[in-house]
Length: 118
Image (cartoon, rainbow, N blue to C red):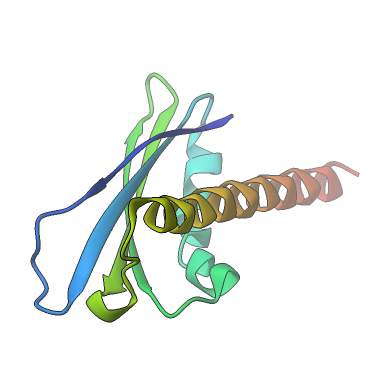
């Protein structure tokens, strides 16, 4: 199960963009699932089809089966919403989008396994 943990605005490193880190956690992850998710992460940017660049970071604790994922979204300063409500709405779109993308990724893995067993 994928859980949203939090998001934070990162210290400014790029002169014309603001970076936001969105964190998620999933439990019950085995090595096969981790490898599959890692392989699919780059597709999230294509799935969202936005004008923002995205990078990813992961931490996997194999012993406990916990996967931490972070999405770093670079938003050009000219596109950063002026008020907090619009900013939160933008972040909510990325959170919901990632959750949907992740659900589809996991479903694809399950379907793939079922075909191998059949």
